[in-house]
Image 1 (tube, rainbow, N blue to C red):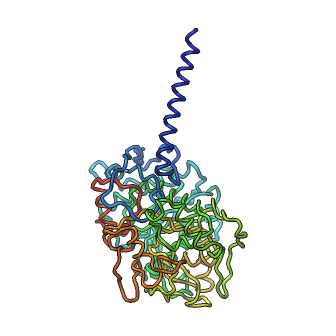
Image 2: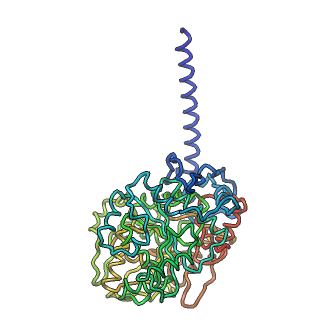
Image 3: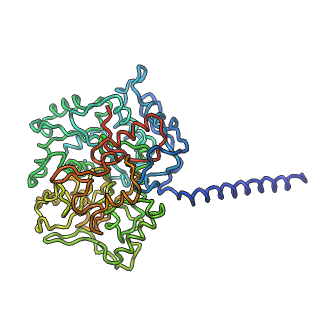
Length: 529
């Protein structure tokens, strides 16, 4: 008994020493690299994908310390999408989703699995089991209104695909991994849908249930059919008769706007493309991007949005970058909505400019992954593509190439109303960005890591991609990242890991799937078959 107090003191001392050592190690590490913008909480047990109770693979994921990469990112914040020191191995993500003799994926119903998962945290209406019925019900019906109850905080992930998309084995493995990671492994807050563009405009998808069901069975693999929604140009024309263009390339958001009106249980919608790949955990990457956007203050935001962040030029400090932009503009940057004739902003008046932390902690109405630049004077192929606005070509605008975004219900509603009521529209890449600008909404370009397989110094790259005026440094006349009225221009983008064309993303993805350890990155386009 006399030895018990001494033993306790020893144990307590050992614990304190261990905590001190751990703290010092963490502090040293955090000083070198900084904390991630979003840290996953202790993961709840994964929801099940298989009817027989087999898991969704969360415990099979393998993380290892990242090493030196062959072509490290030269653009963007290394921590904007997560922890760059921890790499998720491709084999641990993808191999478990192969098609094997003892694994019949047609038994899986990914939509049902996600809805069951959402029940852990949300009140899920039984109507959600009939997504095609929701799509065809009147938006103001009492049944549709029930979808909202108990659903606050839910997020949709919409994959844009089409009827002749080729579902190869590699693509199927990726899609299964994406759904499991973003939804089933994180308690179902996110729910994935396929929004399928049927290219034949003569099929009466809205009026002929048999034609709809036949098309669904023909163009969507069985495992994904209960999370897929079909539309065609006939659908869009009926909703937006005052808009002259309904093609998917130029009007990427019309189908998403209809989706929003029908599926009222979602507050935000991520629009992703089938040729986008993540090297990090999908859910955690999207949450990190969201957290980065939430932390941004409105002062100097549009001016930061208009340029790339090249960390080497700012001592690897995004704070230094923000301070440099702030010093350049001071109180002259955009503050609230930008006015144009016969256009009424729906956002409240901004606070006085003395409130320098305005916007910190607020959710972004728009998240994009490329600079939001002023299209005026760029010679972009769609520079003159603005319709229904009183000031015509003089209307203040912004564009961001690659329509991979997160948008709020509020922003999509404003676009929807303007198109339906006033026939106001722009092409896809300038739609959300311009309406956010004119309404004074919070829009954020997340400066994610981008590698460029071209031997350039940071200074040389800066000179190449920042030729525009101060408010739109990545813009100006004939920026190489845009397709211009004269066609392609020379520049570094063909081998970039994120752009709208080129081989760079696919080369990085091949390296990743062949075993290279890569930090969380977005890769686009990856056309692998």
